[in-house]
Image (cartoon, rainbow, N blue to C red):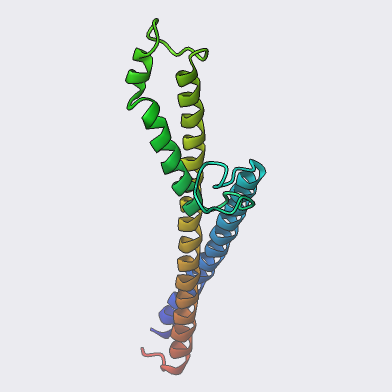
Length: 163
């Protein structure tokens, strides 16, 4: 029985180490992608003040999920004031098609583009957060498995083998 317990202990330690390594990889990858997304958002030089958020610091660049969501919701509100739906926007055109020479069409399209960009940032930063939290969970689980395997190995040495 002690040989089997030692083998199981070694297997559990191996699983623990694998979980620990995967967890570290998840944390590193999630953080690197979050840094990349935030850097990309800063490069766009979009501020909350420039988009009409009252009391916003004019030097504060949008670089977080909370800021991006707040501004995206405001942009959406402004876009919907131009036309409540895309179909309503198309009804403004004599041809029923998008026409960038119509100011409302161009403003609507620009707002939709900015809105989608900001919501993509929100979703992406949310996904990186999930990746990092999953990695931390894997690391804790890996540590727990490794310690359990180690304890099982110690117990296997102390218990005399039976016939």
